[in-house]
Length: 390
Image (cartoon, rainbow, N blue to C red; front, side, top):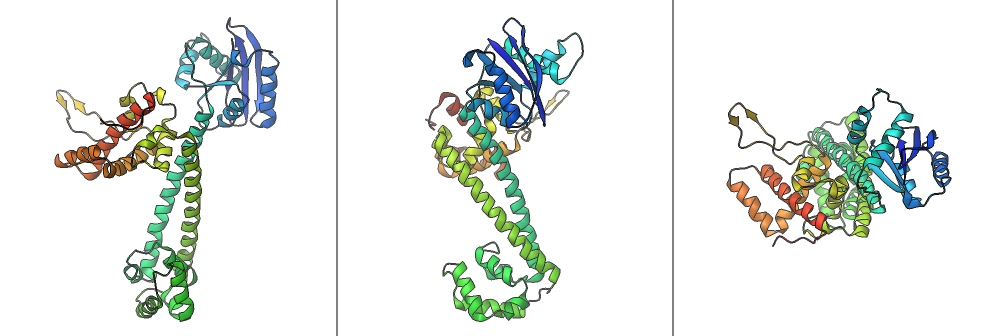
C-alpha cells in the first residue's frame, strides 16, 4: 500500500508518498493550487505504476482550501481521506525534534494514514454534501442580509410615507409596493403620477387584486401624508428595494440548486413530513458523514442543542439553557424543521405541548423538539430507515 500525504495551503500544496514499510517513494514536492498543479500531482502518482486501490491519499481538513483538490482527485478515481487535524497534531507531537514545515507535514499526514485501521473515502455523495454545506451557509447569510434590508426599508418608509404600511393589509413587502416606490418614492411623487399609470401599475403587479379604486385611495392618502419629502431618503428607498430584489433572485437560485441536489440524492430525512428541501439540505450538508457521530448525543452537541452544565460545590443546576455551540447553521435549520414537524406530526405536537405545559417558552419548547428530531434523524441516517416513530 502507498500512502500519500498532502499539506494544503492557499496558493501552493506539498505532497509526498511512503510505502507500508515507511520507505519514502516520492520526496516532498510543491505543486500549485490550479489545474497545472493538479495534473502534476496526478502525473507523479501515475508514475508509481500502482493500482488505484493501492494508493491512499490523505489531507487535513483545512477550511475550503483543499476542496477543489479533493473534487479533482475523486473525479480521477483516487481514494481520498480527509483527516481530523487533531490526529496529525498528535503524531506531530510524538516527533523528537520540534520541526514543522510543509515538507515535514506531508510525512506526518502520510504516517497518520498508515497507522489508521479503517478509512472513510470521499465519494461523489460527499461532494454533494460539501455543495449543500456551502450553499446552506450562503443561504443563511443571505437571509440575514435580506431581513436586515427589509427592516431598514420599513424605517425609511416610516419617515417618508408613514401611512403607507397601514394602507396595504399585507404590509410593505410586496411587489405592488416595491413597484410604486421604485418609480415614486415619496408621497409628492405618487400624487404627481398619472392616475391611469398608477392604476395599471397596481393592477398588473397585484395580478388584479388591487383595482383602480385602490389607486385613487392611495393617491388621496399620499396627498394628505405628513411624511418628509427627503431626496436622501428617496434614494435609500429605491436602492434598498433594488438590493432586496437582488437578494430575492439569489435566494431563488440557491433554493433551486439545493432542491435539485436533494432530489437527486433522495435522502431518508425527506420522509419526515415538515422537512423541506432547503432545511433538509442544510441539515445533511452540515452533518456531512453521519458516521462521524457515534451517538445522537454527539450530534446534538455538534448542533449546540445540548443543555449547558452549571455546577459549583454541591450545587447542580437542574434547568439550564442550550449550549448554543457548534454549528449555528445546523441549529438554525433544526429549529426551523422542528417548527414545521410540530405542525405536521402528532407525536412531536404532543411533546411540544408537554414542554409548554411545564412553563417553557415557545422557543425553549421548540429547542427540545429539535433535540428529539436530532435523535430521530441520527437513527434514520445511520440505519437508512424511513421516518417512523412507532
